[in-house]
Length: 304
Image (cartoon, rainbow, N blue to C red; front, side, top):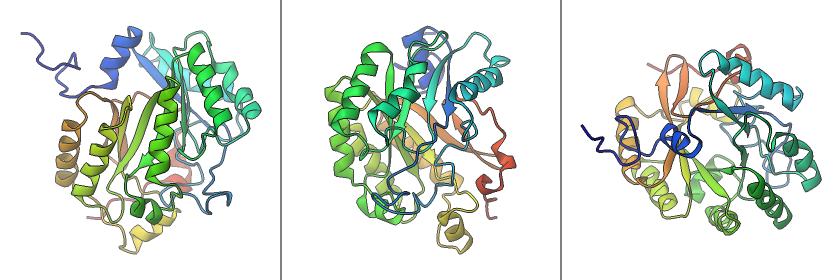
């Protein structure tokens, strides 16, 4: 029987990352998350203090290597952690923690250059914010994109500025759309990260965020379910009853409706509730360190 799904060679009814990687690279690809020691402009006082309210001190890098560990050492540890499961895989170094373009270009070159064209890799992924892409950084990213398969992973989380203010994001949706425009002018692939279940948002707002993003020339979207971490501002708000969880039924319904709006866009990950916290379905990445051993990044148990 012929597969009826345009962007899948399984029974997935959306454009999966696994399908795209097999089409693009001819096989399994593993993203290895790295912590390059950057910070964020809403942490150091440039745009704000304290960072996003859901972020721990790891800056969304809970599954990256340990801070301060040499980057190549982190990368090799990630490869070793995945090799038994995917022995034939190739790799994408993923600069994940904090804002990975928030530094002068000479610093970025020092971090990124050793991974460009590295044997066994097929590209490079760089996570950043829309307000950390000045012209000289954009020019360097364009240079990288001419030399390897580059994806810039832009954290948006929500298209609503009111939500951005609520979570201390400290940049606007207008800044985000401007950044997408500048990246696409330079032929750079863009993956947008969104979070379902943010405080103050209802189903209509979550769908509207995806609707707006789907109208932009982005290449991929990653759908996160809000992950609440002990020791964060949002973690405390949750304990005080100020943050409501989505039920399983609510979340599944929202994601199904969001996927219908993302027919042409690669969906690189969908968070699902599992065990103690969240895991990512379809986002093939490795965890070289058991971060559950670190108290400040432990997930808060779900309320019954």
